[in-house]
Image (cartoon, rainbow, N blue to C red):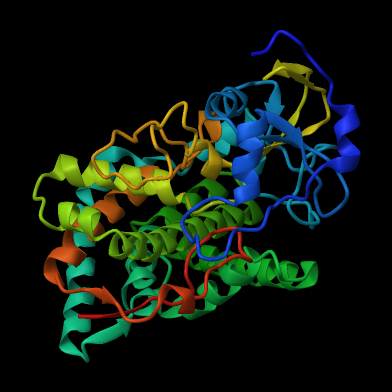
Length: 407
């Protein structure tokens, strides 16, 4: 922390817009303007779609400090919260709440995501991965890896965990794409959210009437006990359904592309049978790619002195983890993909009480995928030019729309 503390109010008129555009031809790196902000200083005011000017926090140490600071709030309804789009409705997921309600609801869904429970699922996930690869190898020697593999793997897993019929995957995938799209109109996002809530609410009714051994049935039991409303349970279901397939699917496809573009690193992963080396490679890919680029959003509830500035109570805070994971003070040569580095300190899953609930499941799925796909298809290659690929610049979750591959 510097010795001089400033309020930063005079910065607002020249505040750059956020999110910042990514550079052409650099699909794996954070926006150059974001890198420049990190080099110039730890905190800066930026301008959002509604004209508000929250603080942008670019350095790793400050990011972790603020994400763990009880003087910040994740409550989207608080004045000053730096929302990425207009706030609609009055019911929100627990990730947009503060303790104690956040903790109360989160505890209701933590059990299936413990490391012990997730590890017990590994053989089933391995079977899903092998089955999808079998299907690919049984057809023509080329495919869109997104549709043939990257999307079905986590969709099948989360549907099994939640108790959602996989036959409905086209419906929930289409609406989840709209919900996380920055380019969709507020009315479109609202309609997609309403459809998903309606779908999960109806499914919750079936689970309450005929409970099974799945997460939604467990939530149904909470509803029956009066611990949750049907709406709250449906909101939880939407969160877990979207987070459970969108993030991991994009990480599978984008991670594969990054490895194909770094053949020396791909060879290290493909030729290793050491589970620890595979786990380490997953952590480095999570650090290097970090597919959630909208930043964690908070609002200060008290004045906070950090990075030579004072964040006043009521001011918004944006923590973009993609640039935090490229902080050279923490990760040497941060723009280089190095599967041999210790990247476990990354903030791809956030930090503090709101860090990602499903991270053990995501890690396990990625370990199974990355240790299997390239070993079983050692000649896998990109079947298009990098410049021909279409990237998801318009969404809250970054990735590729299609990934043509051949072998």
